[in-house]
Picture 1 (cartoon, rainbow, N blue to C red):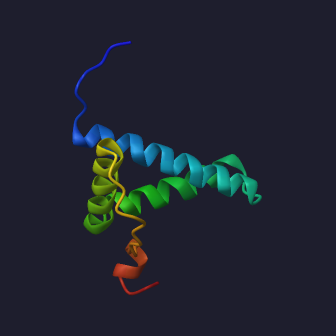
Picture 2 (picture 1 turned 135 degrees about the vertical axis):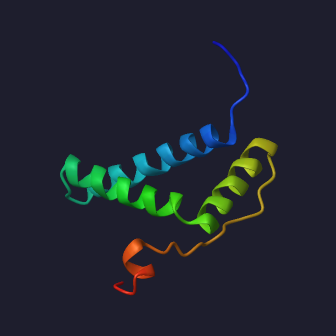
Length: 88
């Protein structure tokens, strides 16, 4: 095993990969086919990446996990493209 320093971007990607895997699994378990599940997970991941408040919370969650400090749950409303355009 090689151990190296990870960048913030890499840690965010690992976090979002796991998050999206859970979303896709939930979608499949709810009756979506794999292609639909992947599209749902990709859409949500894209919405999160585009929302600076959501990414800030993710960064804080990563820091908490790495330091062993848990400040409790945080709820963040993520605006999708449709919502910011007044369609949602």
